[in-house]
Image (cartoon, rainbow, N blue to C red; front, top):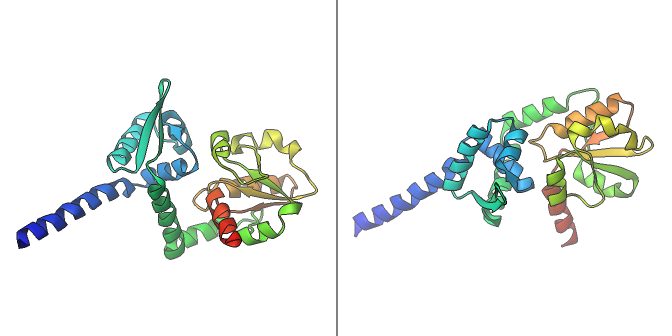
Length: 218
């Protein structure tokens, strides 16, 4: 009986370890963050991560074997997404724990904000000023279409300078991307302020916004 209990316990922990293998890579964590924004093809993930298609495919296979992502076919393309709402919660929780508990992550983030052209703003402050701001989403169009903050205008980061003339000069500009792990909002804010605009980096994600809105309404 004791042996059966030990075998049972070990078998379950083995499976849990296999499940967690998908998290044991910075590139796989980045892929999970991307899929938190929207479902994507291998080519899209490869482009967004700067990784080769071959390496991206290998990472996706590990994630699939770990039951963290699922795939479906859309014509000739294989589309990947997070496997379930539980995985969505897991990824978000992992990011929150890292940001709150890792002093090294806090230091890296503080250094990223330490630039004369980078101004930051909190979620709570933005919600208070929502009627008097220009809310700018600098993620790729597919992520904006999948989910965005109500009222936000989408100008992907790689199109920002070409479209700078449509950004109002008489409003406070609030820029957001995928959250604190994404440097794009700070980069966009720096560029906008160098052009003489009044831009602030939100450094929070759509999910952060929706979570605080839900908690405020409860």
